[in-house]
Image (cartoon, rainbow, N blue to C red):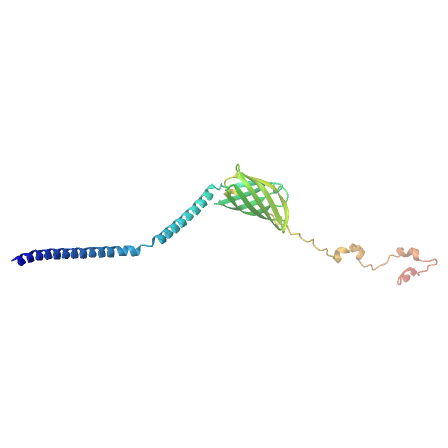
Amino acid sequence: MIKRYMILPLLLVLLLCTGQSLGQSANNTSTTENNTTAVEVSTPAASVAAPTGETALVSDSANSTASTGNATNASAASASSSAPSLNYIWSVSGIESGQITMALNQDGQDLFGQAKYEPDSGQAWNAEVVGTISGDKVDLTLTSQKENEMTTTKMSGTYANEGISGNYTQVSGGKMIGKGAFSAMWINPDTSSYTPATIEKPKAETPAPAETTNASTSDTSTPEQTKKKYFTDIHEYVDKIGPGGDLSGVPPGMGGGLGA
């Protein structure tokens, strides 16, 4: 009896221990499955994501490129908007003895157009103009043909008070032919009204006609003088007749007439 009573508590203890062990195993299994599921779910996201260092580098590079592009665009826009407009017809003095008329067109910082010189006396000329403006600094190159020679005039000046002033250098045939100061003031905002100078072509010299000798015109004798004389006037030879009727001075064939 005593042994039987002792076995029952032992069996109860064993049952309790076995149940607890089974419960812990089940809980552990469930936890493992949950962890595995969590790992499987999170693994694709982790595999897609780039390493932290590389992500930072890519981001910094993209930001740097975008910043550079924005800075360049902003700089170009600022330079374009800050450049004053020189789209006028200008009167330029200091280069020639008279006024040069110059029509400028503008595309951002680029300048281009035409120029002409029409003096009261002397040869007129036309020219092509190209240049740039940066801020208030103006550079222009004027190319013309004067007296059958190409002439280039480099003008560097400053735009202020609606005018341009500076210095020029002029070259022709590989030699410097002039330098000094110039100034320009705009006179008309309508560049379409500009007309080039009219250049007169040199007239070709016409050779004088050659003198011709005409026998009929060179002979100044009258018809009466050129007419053949069939009779000789004896009175022309009176002084040639010697004393006593000597006819030696009379042409042959006329002696008989006198004797008669």
